[in-house]
Length: 359
Image (cartoon, rainbow, N blue to C red):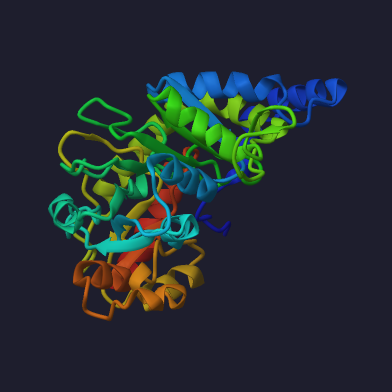
């Protein structure tokens, strides 16, 4: 029997293949490999999609978070507040600015940053707060008097109270498995501020806006023109693909109801969840994941180790028990197959496998 994959990138590619090939041919003919016209067009289109005035395409999502934080004022001697339950890249981006990550716990129902804890963690040295929009839905906006930089790598097309962006800047990733994924690494920052957008653009291009005039020290993190071609083709389909993810999530809710020990994900009030991941909780997670694999069902864990227990961040001085909700979630969360082309038959097989394992 054919395996149910955790994600099926080939299915999405099949829908855009002809358009992407035509775009590649256009770029190859023009030899417009770096900062070609498709980059500016994608930036304009993604800004409109996100409801922002400005978009700056970048080489990857980690740089996007870092550059957004730098534009917001993060640097040596400053602090940045973020959740313990996130991919390490969020904290890595903070550390790369020279600022100190200050971690807070998440709410137990949605596993998103606790806004009250974030507010309490803000102090005189705080440069920014980073809500992380995990799994496809937006975290609450913390009521703080410092810049808010959203990590929106998993929430392309999501909304909260009708807004796709509520912070000073929002960073996103176009890693291939995202709702909007490139054919390699890519990212972007969106913002309503022309000043912030210019700061990010300078950082991405060796500190230069005019060729050979370098206003500041920068980096090399420009969005590749070929990736912009891919992203433009996929962006035109993103609303429809997100709708398919929502339909698949609704089917899972019906198919998985009543399975002993299985806790299903919840959509927070006021949220438009786009189901980048379908994350359940289950005791003895590792055994269940192994059994799913044996039954031909792919799965993942997002994420097995909270930031404060990651060896790279031992120097922050946190200990096991400091963020109990993040720690308990890390031991129980399990991501089931989720992608726009996921079929009802595939979902039924996932449900059958879980019922067999959990009784």
